Image (tube, rainbow, N blue to C red; front, side, top):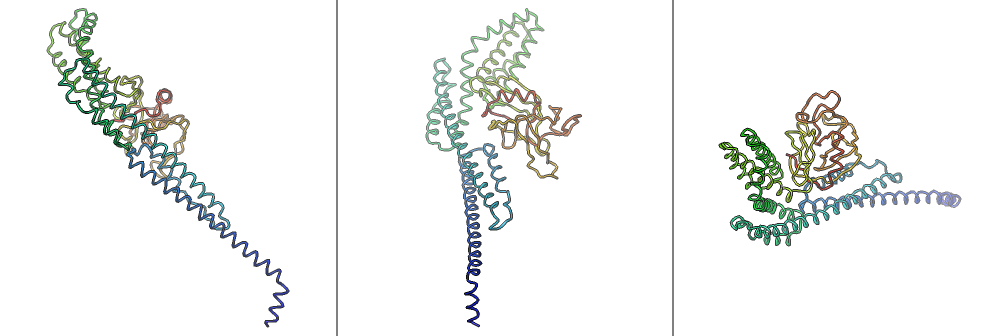
Length: 426
């Protein structure tokens, strides 16, 4: 029997060798493919770990969620993708999948780290500029002869704030300094503006009022009431931007009390001049302290307004989020502009919130997934359109959290609004 086996092996040695060699080659190829897949998956998991660490660092440094939630969504989308269900040696698609996912995760990490460094630099510079501006304004106030009692509350603030800037290492800390200085900067600007203009301008504005009313008591009172309405509207704008307007408001209240009992044309003209001066003071302060450009969105009025140094330059009706998906109130900024863009529903088909892919001409993102954009599917905007309503040609409910703007007005906003513009939703 042994001899027969030996003769068989000797006679078929080549064939047996080929078979064994083929098995060894296939086994080796399978092993190589398995190792390639394992390394590719390991690279992906490592890249994802680095992204999650970068997100954790961004949170520790104090970035607002809205400032990087778009990258979080990208990462979650990548992580949620399922690799092809194939095994070695036919696993080239799985290897490519993990390699592509690793690249995507690396790109997300790089974008996030770049964004973090940019915000660190921007918030540092902003805090330093606020400290410098407060010091300059204090010097200017003293030169103008502002009462020392009014300046006493500002003593020591610039030195303390400079120490905080020097010690700060996070976005949160730099922003805390800027926030801390917002109120004193606004208040000091009002004090300076009041000192510069009040005494000089009351007489001038009173004379202008006299030239308009020609001594008619009815016209004089109407003029004073119109001036009161104007300054109250500007006070409301200043409050939206969280300015400290206590000084102007106090003067306006006193003048309003005088207006209710004023009997002569001369008194009415003097009060008119007083309102005009307070409004001038307020507008000067807003011009100096408010952002060069800013957008406000009134959820009650369903109106977006554009301001240049506190002066309204544009407004339009809009439609904001529907019940259950309301547009969030708060202070944000335009962090990304893109044109065109396809809106893709984050809700699955079958959800009451699902919507088909919708192309828009331009969108300005300001709060994570909330953007300001045109909406071809809507023909009515303004009060009430955030709730179910009648629209004969378009969408009959509010948005999914975004702010819809008529196309022609969106073109104006797009061209006027740079990235970084503050957005206040209230």
